[in-house]
Structure formats: structure tokens, C-alpha cells
Length: 290
Image (cartoon, rainbow, N blue to C red):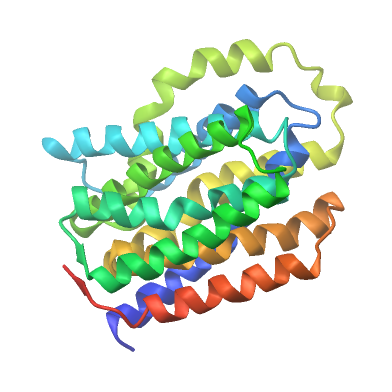
């Protein structure tokens, strides 16, 4: 199997793991506040990551790698989780998933800026078509306008895209799972105080098991283990090409939202999903210089 194929398969695995993030976050913020969910999950993931880094005796990052890790942490440890958690207190998970559909295009753009990739003109055209489908769907579902939660989700897109592109670039030398693990450990000193302050207001004894299960998933799955496959896939198959697999994430998330949050799915949603899948399939065959 070629590196491109391996990268796409690993990227798809990461997307499936990430696609549960918004529906499960929507469940978690039913009982927990957005700061506890958005930042607390990183503290828990950092504890697990630190133990694994020690147990496997991974080398420490050097020089400029620390600066790159800081960019990754700001994007996928702080920015995206906090913004997405707040948005999930305001809008359904299915709506949020569709707004995040522009993430592949943003990831490709930052891959070009930060990692020196050069997608072909036709690749950008196909990427814009897929993203446009997702945006049209979001506007259609939102009554033709963007709300504050939509703007928060778009800011989350920028945060995630920067973290994805920089993390993929760094994973070529540091390793995929090592990048997210070190980024989590680096962020802990800045997260502890707000997490302790907000978590201290909770009555843990009264929380149902669903709250604990949802928080555990976003901490260990969304914030940590999903990046094992995702960063490795981006490094192998290329940020722009593998990043297009994220166009499917919106529709996976919609499906999970229906299962977990009892959100309705119409035939129009499935129609948009098929059109986006076609864009991903075409984009896979187009040239990306690395």
C-alpha cells in the first residue's frame, strides 16, 4: 500500500473519531460548563500523554520544535475545544458539524502556508466546491444567516486548521502521537487554574454516568487518541489531500447526532453528503506538490 493510501485510511480513522466530538460535547455541556469540558479534557489527556511519554522514554523536543508545539497547543488544545464547547451550548451538534465543513479547505490553505505544499488549481476548485456545498447547507439550516455560535465555530475552524497543519509538519520529525502528547503537556500550566476554578463549582456526586462518559470520550478520544491516526495520516498522504477527508466529518457527525442527541436527518442532508463525497473522491486524484 502506498503512503498516499495509508495516509487516507489513517486520516479517515481520525475523522471518524473526531466526528463524535460535537455530538458528545453537546451531551457533556448538558451537565458541565464549557470551560470544564473545553479545557478540562486537555488536562486529563495531558496526564495520560505525560505518562506514556515517560514510559516510552521519548526524546524531548528541541529548539524550534517547542515553538511549533506552542502553535499546535493554541490551535487544537485551547482554541478549538473552548470555542466548540461554547457553541454547543447554543446550537445543535448537526448544525455545528456542517459549519465545520469548511475545515478541509482551511487546513489545505494553512498546509500551503506552513508546510510548503502546492495543490493544483483544479484541486482548489474542487475543494472550494465541496466547502461551498457545506456552507450552503449551513446557511440553509440557519435561515440564511450566521449567528454568534456560527462565528465561534468558524474561529474554531481557523484554530484547528493552524494546529493541524503545523502539527502535521512537525510530526515528520517528532512523530505523530508525540506531537499531540507534547503539545498537551506544554499546555497544562496554562489550563490548570481555569479548570480548577470552574470544576470546583460542580457537584460531582450528582452528575450522571452519561456526563462522565461524554467527558472521558472528548478527553481521551477527541483530544488525544484521534490525533495518533490524524497527524500520521497528514504526514504520509499530505496535508491538503488527506485534509479533504474532513469533508466527510460533517455527515458522520450528523449521523452520530441523530443517534446520540435525537436530532432529525432529512433526505436533503443525505443529498448534500453524497455531493461532498464526490468532491472528496475527485480531490484524491488531483495533484498536490510537496
